[in-house]
Length: 368
Image (cartoon, rainbow, N blue to C red; front, side, top):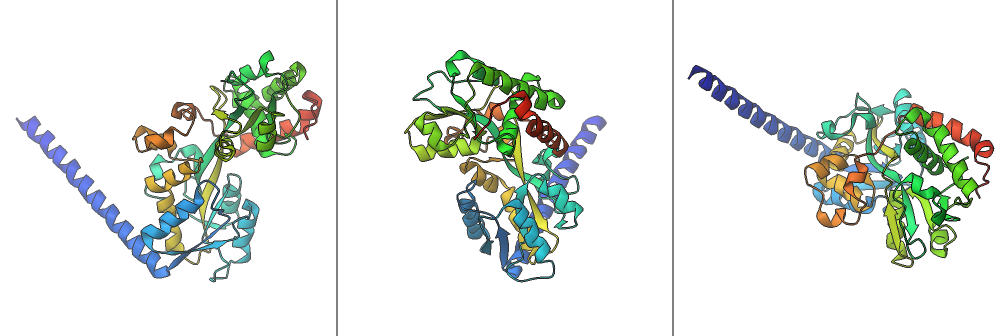
């Protein structure tokens, strides 16, 4: 009887603690919303509305919290965003960005330069450790994986994994979406093929990727042309290795002329991540924190997914059944993304060094 009473008391204590924690979280969020509304606006930069569904995401944030969003230079690149912070350190006016959305490598370097301030969103624990700074200075927001974009009017049997691309039926069919001596997307494509060939050994992926493409080139399957939607439609490059979100967007744009299938390979699934961060000099720091809370909420994450960019919490959302069925139906199998590998900056740098310098000697294909 005593043991039973002890267990009941323990259970009651856990329930009370959970209720207190929930109430505390609601109170903190309410305080943040109030502080952000007093600031009145948020300043963003480099967020074109047709990129990753950002138009809908921005409108959703404005509708939910009633804040004005000042949008700077939608076509800026990651480097421009960093320079905007540097140039406006003492400026509290409209040209100073509160938040940035940049390529993975810019997160650590901006932190090192003292340009960012830390903030951990309430969904922090659902963001993979490999895609965030432990202290909260930057965190992955969305990613794409290297996939096969296939013109099925020409290619009748879909390739399902990297080794399939070496088959005779794909002669003069396979292209990269860039020059692997200069394009990050193409470099990652070579790396992904090598990761498959190396059975998941990241350290060997760059070398194995070069060997794989050398073999493909020797067999006559590799087309040394930068693959684009136009070359896919024309049949010059009926299979293109590219980021899935670009391939899926092309599928919509082409509207069935030709028919396009997007295949995430069974192995060698490599993810490319962008990251969010708050400027250390943000004129509207509370609005910036509220923006982060929105982006990493279920609603914000699904907003990116509507634009075909996989939100960083994708696996968590799928596991908790929060992704609408009609949205999942537009994507390759969710199981394919569970295998995604997120290379570290060091691993990416090494792969870039090997692939860019050895492509000509090992593969010998002059991509144009």
